[in-house]
Length: 85
Image: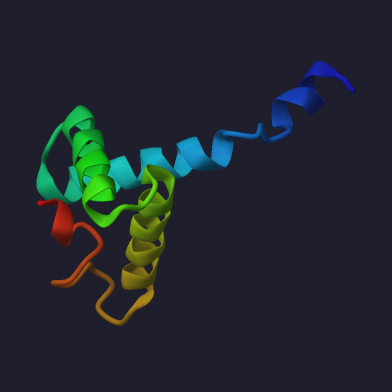
């Protein structure tokens, strides 16, 4: 396998890190906090709900995508970040 092919292959942790980064971006966009503060909120909420950060991040991303696909297209009250504000 050449270098170019190896660079295209997903690595084991890419999905988890990607979901966490996306969730942080959603929180930053919705609340105006820094990425570091967004991650802190993710950690706090995951502890509060007793779920892994990666699972909470995945939930936030899925809800954000669904809310964008609904008529009206913007995250309504009850959006994935309401608990993190």
